[in-house]
Image (cartoon, rainbow, N blue to C red):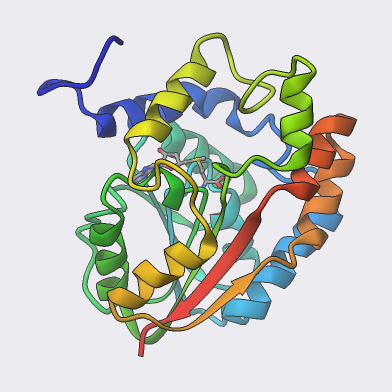
Length: 257
Ligand SMILES: C[S@@+](CC[C@H](N)C(=O)[O-])C[C@H]1O[C@@H](n2cnc3c(N)ncnc32)[C@H](O)[C@@H]1O
């Protein structure tokens, strides 16, 4: 792939990049969940911001292999997972079949979902916001999809800001990006980063400012994610684990009035 043009856009490249990663995505710590301690940490985070499901309708955008969708399902939400990668959806559907969860997985663009307006109680996404091409279109869409009083929970991080551990690791010859990327994929990821809306740093405060512009209220930025990151770090190499604990990762919760 040499460049983006009329016949091959940044959106095609994002979809293709993740489709190529779908088969092995769940092998990485930080993607699939490898301990009950981590699962508890996720349940706590979701409960803290969204409450228990009690049959309420949840839309997990960029659902990937369905990790967050399944956490929501555990907690009693009626879950729809949406992703634009057929390969990711195939993994998610296989997982749902294996676990006997009745999650509806659909192929959709998170910036334009074609879902009914004012039809969801909660919307979630993990590691989607950094890769949005048109973030304001996406935020407007999510606002429209929520019922009045509905909540949006974003989990992401400011990966453009290198932690002191990352700087040290790179200085001593460590590879940039994820440790487990196939050859050429780190460069592709870097190129994607250069073409998305949040191409430099993505501070949580900047994301919140853009969410408020489309009408969301009551923003909460939550960096208390140790109950998730500590069990993850314990399953990683020493340096990767330390990196996980020092990166600027956060959750953001906002409400539609
Ligand atoms: C880093 S993965 C995260 C998957 C999942 N949210 C998780 O945390 O396990 C990013 C996912 O976002 C999806 N994605 C990126 N942009 C999207 C868009 N505009 N619409 C739908 N899916 C998108 C990709 O196909 C991929 O499955």
